[in-house]
Length: 499
Image 1 (tube, one colour):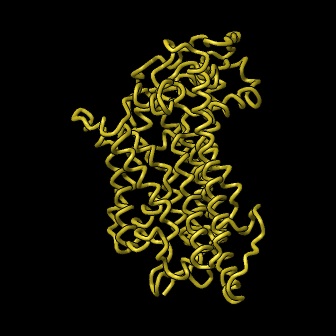
Image 2 (tube, one colour):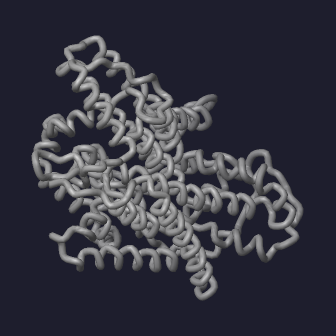
Image 3 (tube, one colour):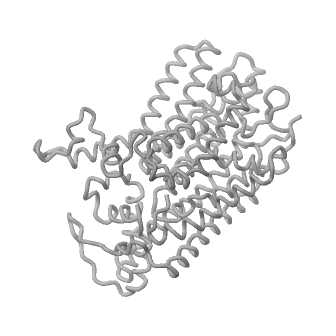
């Protein structure tokens, strides 16, 4: 029997709790970083170095508060150095193109507007760094709220959604979400895009997911969500409703939306080709410029950072595999659990879902307008008036996550939740990312690479609340998060390798 939900998913109390948890976690990371930096000497002390820009150098008078400026700039470590430099000087060197432009653009915009009056006090570079900190931390707080909203739609349980959202706020890669890294912006845009997609606001979802591929390269994978949507809607139109022309239009429309999500990343590669390859003699061209398909990003990752298939499988990298093992273990367990729970859903890519789930998926993963959508009004006539009324009621419930009599069930007993058919695209997404991080990337990066995957937190919340699982697994998850927050804030803030 389906259980009754105790609270309304739109309860502002839960949203307030998520907001407080997100703000508290960011303040905690800030305090920890300051404490660790004051107690230890950084491994690399080059962070404050700021040579003149190669092109269009600009000079500013010495800051009136040099100690404050120094304190801010000392926190610019690891990839933060690249983002600050790009915001200040543009893409000066080839390896800079590994860092996509959305975060530097936001930093530049804030430094020239909101924080411009602070330039005489702390200097331009410190203002850029402050802009980056503000953008990333605010983006993370908003991402946590959107994650809660998305979780309510998917899990149909506000309590499980709340727990998963709190886990996001204290995730093991938290230090990167408080630093000048693109993780926060990507999390906001990808999670927010998925929320708008499942809410029926397809045009808004396309825009947000397209911006995610302007923040991080793996944003292009988010086109898969629209690919999944297109696949199911085309199937409904062609096989169930026998409307071949409508199915063709759905495929064309879906392909265009997927392309729109990928275009920002491709456009940035074209920008790199224009700057690095055009108007140069054959002798001056870099090797990748002469390739049949000149792909700058892959070349940089391979040439400067040694990224490639199985290239990291070396005995000396064993500590890094151990460092990434907790997040990889959690991700693999989440996939295995889902596959074992719903093998028919995985094998059929969702086409063998129950009748009610198929009906719901036809509504959610459609190009029609849901409540609050900016798309075209829902006007598709169903085979019968009774079916139309049933679908409209179901659609409203799904959009609000509001089931007064319980959750949709698979067969007669299985409840929607982590084993829902709606989780499948997220499982496919995280599965691809796990394989990429383990076999291709520097494996230690998996901690932050996978940290924006919603299904990990949904699975973790299931593990921590399920009566069929030992409480020790919940304690282990919290211990893992706390330990990596402490370890990450200690090592990262002092320029020691972490992930």
